[in-house]
Amino acid sequence: MIALKRLTLARAGHPLIEGADLQIHPGWRVGLVGANGAGKSSLFALLAGELQPESGELEMPATWSLARVAQETPALPDPALDFVLDGDADLRRLEAAMAAAEASGDGEQIARLHSHYGDIDGYSARARAAEVLHGLGFTEADLQKPVAEFSGGWRVRLNLARALFCRADLLLLDEPTNHLDLDAVLWLESWLKTMPGTLLLISHDRDFLDAVVDHVMAIEQQRLSLTTGGYSDYEAARAARLAVQQSTFAAQQRQIAQLQRFIDRFKAKATKARQAQSRVKALARMEVVAAAHVDSPFNFTFPAPKHLPDPLLTLHRAAAGYGGKPLLQNLKMRLSPGCRIGLLGENGAGKSTLIKLLAGQIPLLAGERKEAKTLEIGYFAQHQLEQLRPDESPLQHLERQEPDTPEQALRDYLGGFDFRGDMATRPVGPFSGGEKSRLALALLIRTRPNLLLLDEPTNHLDLEMREALCLALQDYEGGVLLVSHDRHLLRTATDELWQVADGKASLFEGDLDDYAAWLSARKTAAKAATAERVEQKAERRQKREEEAAARQELLRKRRPLMKELEQLDEQIASQEAEARTLETRLADPALYAPGADRKPLEELIRRQAQVWQSLEAAELRWLEVHAALEALPAPER
Image (cartoon, rainbow, N blue to C red; front, top):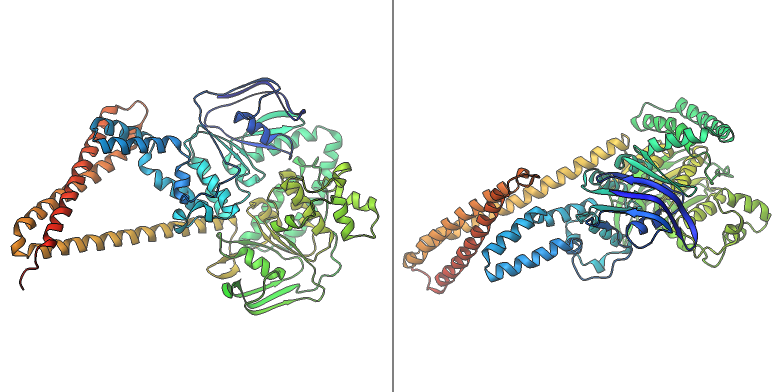
């Protein structure tokens, strides 16, 4: 159990948490929430032993092992799969000891080590590591690819895979979905729901938190509180607390009334399509959400576009790709004012390529891209953050865009994005990723675009800013095309889903739940196809071996050796059958249940070691006899 007793935490003399008293029990999955800078990462550093409390106590079991995602990945020549396996130090030490024991022929040591290896699920380690990598978007070919050959974003995924693979008592995850697409987020969600051990999770994705955590720990005004349930439960409790304050309650009612007008308007034009109805439900739920975030520091809207031509942009039989090679073909899209499109697709399917084509960032390979004369595109992608001038302040960035606008008007606008006071005049360079994303969005919104192309706009944004963006998009009059792994944003900001898959982009008839089911079925089919290929390969290998044995049997001058070969073949087959039987029996979970008699397990492992040793000797002798036969002259025909 983790216990905080009157704990006060500070960083650089700035108090973050004061007088915290709470307990986290083994097996809990706790979501840690709070504004950027509230102290979430500092609390993780405290749990990892990197910080000490100003006062009070932190109690954790001394035997607990801890896993967290490393911030950097060296350019190693090691294959990705081995890099992930190396994260389990005990596994690797045990494998080295087993190799040494087998080299020395120490049967008792081999049996003891193999027993321990079974206790930590060592026999399934490579399969488990591969499963984690596949779930995070790595292909089969990537498993043997050197770590040094992966880009920065993929190395972040490798670090996440390594942390997930560890057999830790406490897993600390800080924004694990930031570099993932929706498919990987869905896999990670299902994995975390069944993981053993205790989880502490920092995330600004409300759907992800709701699906994974059973408690929410919040840092608000230097106080640490613990709420039972998911993030929605915490949000409802927070809304109720805020409503106690009369001024906050009045603000809540104004915001809810504004949102209700939009919901009613949307319902009036919504069809019975699954995605449209899904969005109606999501918007209705935002009444509670709005109440919980009424004290948000963010308050902005999209100014009305200067022009709203219809259509804004069309693609006809368009093709897009790189190096002259098309990734997407026969694209047909019509973007009009008021359209709300969310793009779905597996990693590498071409979602970002499609957005770049629409934004005019890459050339057409074929077909037609036609834009309205008064089209004004607002394109947001992560590389926009790199275009910010590190030595200039938010105010200077905005003044560069609008040199004739009074400074106070620009300051008022920046205040809606929480760039107030000195924050508006500080250089951007030291800003956090979330602050830079906020500024990039503020600059983009100020240009009054009539078509928004947003590629993962919520990366690094906290929950308050994400909610403010959802609300601002409700009254936006232009068109929106969005790629995001944030399902709350997709549900509330889009009324049409398009799927990018197999080189095409087409309307997806369903909602996000339907997409998750489609994705699961697709992955199941892929696994079955892989298993079938492996089985066919094994059958072909077995057939070749049988034909080789039959040919050898017909050679009269080699009868003695052939007889021995036949005996060896029978011995190997018998021992392989026994090895498979032993492996099946060792996979029985009952053998490893707490309190179970260890003698049957140790006897099985001991017999398995004997079978493997005998099988290895038989296979070696088989090779020697076969070599002797090959050295003999060919029989006469």
